[in-house]
Each structure stands twice: as C-alpha cells, then as structure tokens.
Image 1 (tube, rainbow, N blue to C red):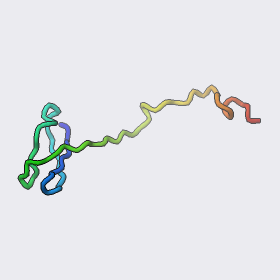
Image 2 (image 1 turned 135 degrees about the vertical axis):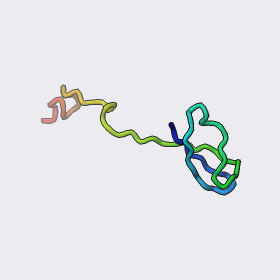
Image 3 (image 1 turned 180 degrees about the horizontal axis):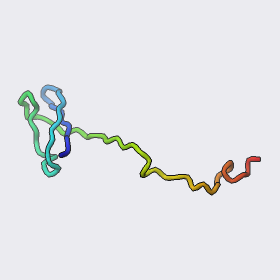
Image 4 (image 1 turned 30 degrees about the vertical axis):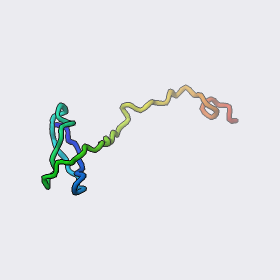
Length: 69
C-alpha cells in the first residue's frame, strides 16, 4: 500500500499515512488532531541501469569514429 506524506498547516508537523491510491487525495488529520493538512509531493529514487541507454559500440563522434588522430 502506498505511503503519502502530509504537512499540518496549523502546527507544521509532517507525517506519513499508508492508504490505497483511491484515497490519496482525501483529507487527513495530523497526529495532534488538526484538520488543516496538505499532501506533499514525494520523490522516488530509481537506481539501476535497466532503463539507461547503452552505447552502440559502433563508433560515432570525433574520438569514437577515429578522426582524432
């Protein structure tokens, strides 16, 4: 289940909630009981090379094509 970050506008605290994606935009009360909260945008770190372009190995460019000397 996804986790969403929220910030309370009343007290300034930040907190996380696990909830279904269908409920991601529903209001959330902060742990101190305040109702004036906003959902924060989260960043996701993706590592690995599965989606990275691979060099063609066929030369190209100045030094890859042999024109440098």
